[in-house]
Amino acid sequence: QVQLVESGGGLVQAGGSLSLSCAASGRTFNIGRMGWFRQTPGKEREFVACIRWSDYSTSYADSVKGRFTISRDNAKSTVYLQMNSLKPEDTAVYYCASGFVSENLYARPDRYAYWGQGTQVTVSS
Image (cartoon, rainbow, N blue to C red; front, side, top):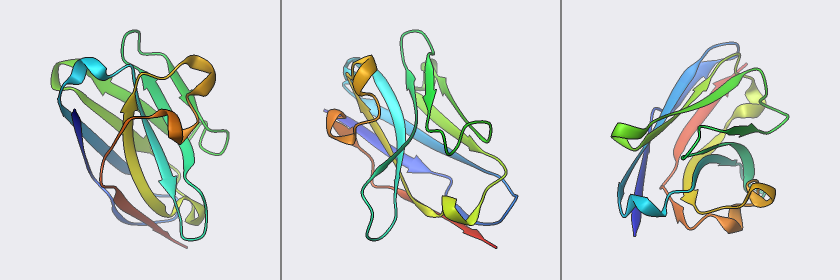
């Protein structure tokens, strides 16, 4: 079992920045990738970014490329999401996820075994 706890959400004006954190505990050997997804009412969960734990390889959704950066601190078993140039359409509940996910499936939420409770990000116009 892996436990994930997100933090750092809040309210920010369009164009501003937020940094999210996700701390993992438990059987962290299960971590192949850690990623961020987001979800708004009436929509399915959307891939944002992920990082492969072994080699720091990262992937991003087209909608956030150039604005968001995912990084990790292996010693702390923590993944971060730095969000810059935020837009109102970035408003969502952001979820941290982990699992052993192959390269061609990293954007599919059903392939991640463990999930945090989510943290709300609201971007005002």
